[in-house]
Length: 416
Image (cartoon, rainbow, N blue to C red; front, top):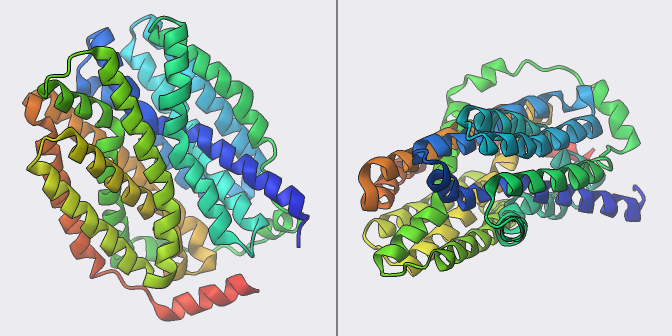
């Protein structure tokens, strides 16, 4: 057993890394401000976030597969610096009103940084806590879900107020804060000594037949649809709520922005909690059963939101959907591990994360298109699209197989 104090310290550092990285989920706080300030369309502005999430998913996939080769601390440090630089480059982009530079800075550079740094905390915490994997990995991924709260209720409002609503200066200040603290936390993310040597000698296994199997394709698609549903709200929850409040007669801009930030913070709590709650529930209910249940709940929420424009009901719906969005990320690792065994886990989970990147493009762009072309009906139309995708995802859960022999062999491997 590793030194108890040291491993808990590393677990806290891993959680803090995810907390700062998860600030990307507060993009909807900036979506409306950037659109109105610079005159870009909702779709043009939303591509910033879409590119960042796409790069996050693709790079996290690569990082998960190559983590043993390059080392946990190195990937975490490089990723932390790149994510911080994404904000700093965004300062120059916004100052010069350059949309391509914003795509490059926040989207590409920041997104690559997110992907490289994202994979390390969970992997490190898992290795340090073979006896408490559910508890500790749940704590770490919950940190990512709570990142939007940190941004929407602390960092962004404080700097916007200090710099008199200057978006360029706010992004610069946030980038500097990230550059100071993220590498500091990431520097402590190292594997236990025996794991450093064991991972290098792990036998290579050909995963291509499984990647292109019908079973994995179904898993990938239903995960993608779950991501799209969550991204519809993560990217636009504040603007959508403000639209409903304006329709109800509220016109004070500061009040509107405050209510939007509060919803981002609340939904972040549910996003973080969902990763832990649904992940734990899947231990008893089974991975596919749990995934099916959370998708059914989402379908009911989207069906309800189609027929109401009540801001309170909308807010409750956002929180429930993000609870289940977080739950999808809590269930997928275990589903992959049990379906494909320990030796294929890193590769198969890495490929599964590409669904995050694809969903990160489609979700925000669906809502952005609706806002640019359908005005007050943007939310309703987005919810209809989400409902159709979720219903397809529910059907796919009945075709996914969880081979009990593979489950047993995986459990035996991890119990060694």
